[in-house]
Length: 250
Length: 225
Image (cartoon, rainbow over all chains, first blue to last red; front, side, top):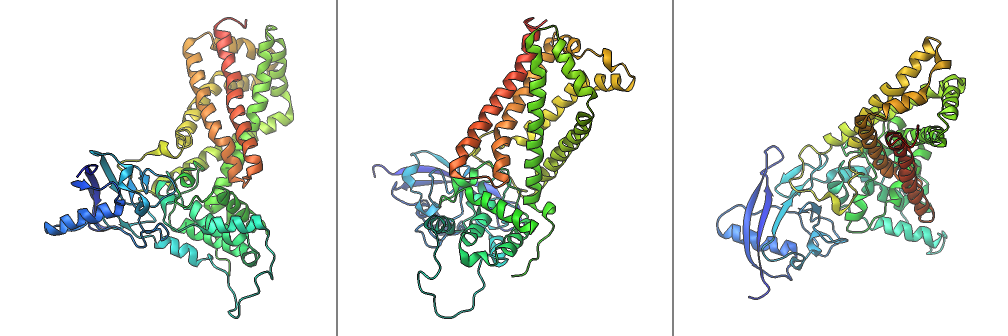
């Protein structure tokens, strides 16, 4: 078929966290440029299963760019060469016939490999459990305009809340720092009156958990902001720096 | 929600703030150093330059600040070492392919190497000028100490000139990332002022190293006698 591509894939295979992994080369033929990167993986896995080989384990769920599961480090970048997309939204037309594509898992001490390209991101869940919420008494929802919130604050909080917790920021950071993720979660609550009530304890606890999980330290290279599929801004990191400092002198 | 966190300075954010603040302090020293040294461009045979050097050697506030400066430098370097070791531990298995240039500047990813080069340069620099001045202070000959002549002598050696230019280049790139980075760490990030911080940082990182670089070059080429 015309326009279809033949590619060489070099994919990280690793049986478990305990064992060492290595890159294994797989040639794939007749790949449609309109396939998503994950669909290309489905084709490869079907081939492997037909041959009686172990299919490649990779995370995926919604396949519409909102769940943050499809963690793949493609040719040296999280979610591949395009900006503002997750792997499921990356299409094979972003590559050329004959390309060699190297696919690795997220690499961070805090994200141990489970198998092949799947990593354990429960470190993020433990950070959230330390304060990524507000404590409220349940009951009827308040009237919509009971608490007036400036439009700029509402927008900034909304943009921070767009974080899908995919971990691309950690994956691309030279220090495996989780600052962009944690700061997005701190910001989305710190910017709103409902979140202000517990703001002091929240930022302290979430930063402490982030450190305990073994993420590295932010050195402001800005790589996370560039690679974030949801365009989370470095302004959130600055906001968390302020919040954390103020919380500690209180 | 109860607070279960550790001490500020033990946290990653606290350590980074110390890096930023000590960095800005060292930057403030660079301004003083650069201004005073610029007296050599008057080409007056080093009269005003040596007066400046004498003032710096004898003023008690400067003597105290010299000690503070050393502590600032040591804190900055040691904290960098601690942070770098932690950062290396945070990624025990490295990527086979990593496209760093796609999302960040090389010098922002090389602050540790640039800083180490600067530290090596400082050893050479202090052994050229600071140690002699200290010796003169201690044996009471500081009044006759001619820093200007010493400078002329050092920069007639082409190897020294090359070492200084390399050191200054490392400084320029270290500042180019460090200056705006310190503000981000202090939480100063606002669309209205980001441009100003970035521009000021870039200008500072070009102008100050250029003035410093002009000194050995001008002496070596004989423009300053």
